[in-house]
Amino acid sequence: MLRWVFDGRSDSRPVDDQGMRSICLAVSATFVHDLARDDLMSAEYLHWDSERYGGRGHPRSVAKSLATTGQPPSAQWPMDAAIDDTDSAYAPSSLVIGPFRRAVTETYFDLDLAIDKVAGGTPVVMCLLTSPEFYDPDVSVITTWTGPIAGHAVVAIGLAIYDGPPIPGGPEPGARFLCLRNSWGADWGRAGHVLMSEVVARQCTQVALDIAPLDPDARSIRA
Image (tube, rainbow, N blue to C red):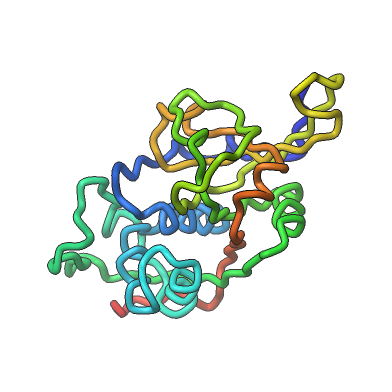
């Protein structure tokens, strides 16, 4: 009963698993940046570097880091769910030498603009406030929001429209659903993804981020 306007799940790599760390924004931003380049870059470096631009986990800090410093290849500093980023020793090793790829970030406070991007085939980072429904590991569709519990970042990687008949207590014909890619491993949702109704998305979304490569941007000097 769902008609997909855009479905980016089959074109993407397996979902990440951040463990108990608060690295979701860097992971989500890196995934969108990777897709734009067909490459793999270091979410760990982006998370670390954003601290100097205002603090880790903040959209403005991540955007500033991407535009100013950029990201080295993922192989130079892979994301590790066991890393303690509160440790004073948390920093990249001498193996992180670049090249550093930069990106420009466009911010959307209007969800319609973000949905238009997704409908056109461009995944966007969604910074939202989670509710209890989000923490059910078997969740597949989120149609209610009873939060907030905490801030979180995911990637809107698809858009579907309900084309079935009216269902009492269910979606109306024409209702739109965003397909969200999480970073809590493949055991959450359906292989790490969930559908969220547009109604809920409008209740919980704080900001959306569109990330595009910034050229020329291949620098080989560690910042």
